[in-house]
Amino acid sequence: MTIKVTIWNEGRHEQVHKEVQDIYPDRIDGAIAAGIAHPDFEIRRGTLDDPDEGLPDSVLNDTDVLLWWGHMAHEEVSDGLIDRVQQRVLKGMGLLVLHSGHHSKLFRRLMGTNANLSWRETPDGDLERVWVVNPSHPIAEGLPPYFEVNASEMYGEPFDIPQPDELVFISWYSGGEVFRSGCTFQRGRGRIFFFSPGHETYPIYHDKIVHKVISNGIRWARQKHTDGRILENWHRAEPLHGRPVAVKA
Image (cartoon, rainbow, N blue to C red):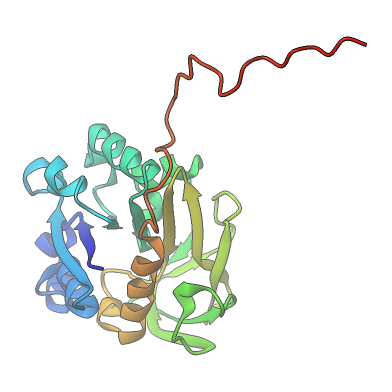
C-alpha cells in the first residue's frame, strides 16, 4: 500500500549559507526525497516560505507520515500550524522529527519539555558512531550493529525529553559524549520517531544508511489501521447495559 509522505523543511539555510547550498543544491528536503525514493512512497515537499507555510490542509490531511526538519526559524512557524499538525498526530499521522527539529515548537509541545541538550559544532565535525541498541525493532531492520557518520554535530546528554517508549539508537562521539539518537513515542494514535543525525553543513542526508533509517522510520510510523474511534471527547448519553437489578436476600 502506498504511504503518503510529506517532507517539511524550513528551507532557510539553503537561502543564505553557500556551504549548505553546495551540499544540498536541491535543499535538504530534496536530498531526503531522492534518497528514500521508492514505489511504496508518494512524496511531497514543503517549506516555511511556501503558501500556508508549506502545509495547507489539503496536504496535511492527506499525509500518512510527516518528516520535520527545522533549525533557524523555529519561532517563525505559526502556532496555528503547530495546532493543526499536533491534532493530525493525535489522530494517527506518523511524525519523524529530524536533527535540530528537537527544538521545534512542534516537538517541544508533543514532548511537554524544552528538549534541551548539549551540543558542539566544529568545521570538521565529530565522528558519530550510532549503535543499534534495539536490533529487533522495525526501524533497525537491515542495519549493521552500528554505523558511523564521519562528520556530525555533537548532541549530548542530558537530553530533556520524557522517557522514550522505545530506544532504538545510542550515539557515541569522538569527543566522548553519548546521546539517545533514536527514540520513539506515542501521542494519541500517532507514532513519533526522533532521529538526531542531520546537521546542515555536513552531507549526512546523502548517506545510504541514513536513508535506510528514515525509510524504516516512515514504514514504522504509518498508522497501521483506522479501526475504533479517534481519541476525542465522546458523550455517551446511554449506558451500554441497564442498571443491574439488586438481588434480594
